[in-house]
Image (cartoon, rainbow, N blue to C red; front, side, top):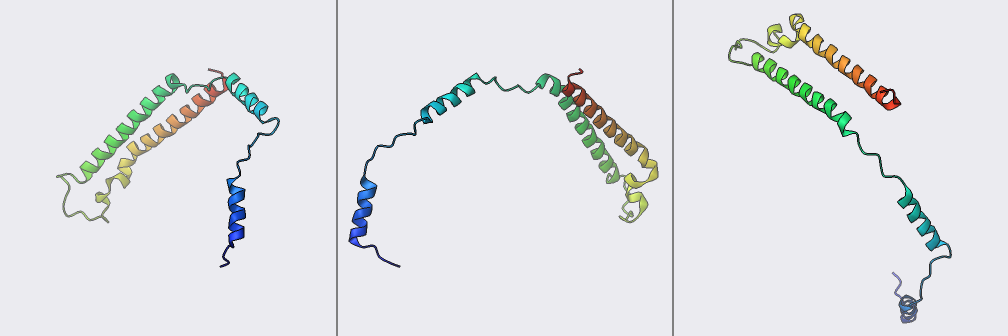
Length: 132
């Protein structure tokens, strides 16, 4: 590693200790003021339409709570006190949610979910195009 000589250090100190006044370029102040005026003249941002979104969020929350409750009830029936201790995970009666007799409610939930998704997409496309 090369050591700096005393002459190089003195030159560096002289360069760094200079207090030259720094001036902005000729059009800098004008361009900054133009940008400030453009920003001040811009319209305010569009507020989020909470009045339209709130019903959908409430319905979605209620649907989520109902699904969670149905799942909890299904699991509690599966592992409740009436469950037979002789059931093994490989026996078909240990997994009632896979049985064909239980597919009716599951199919209903799937259809309901697809219907809600379809209606939500159609409604948002209609509101977005201004045909409301």
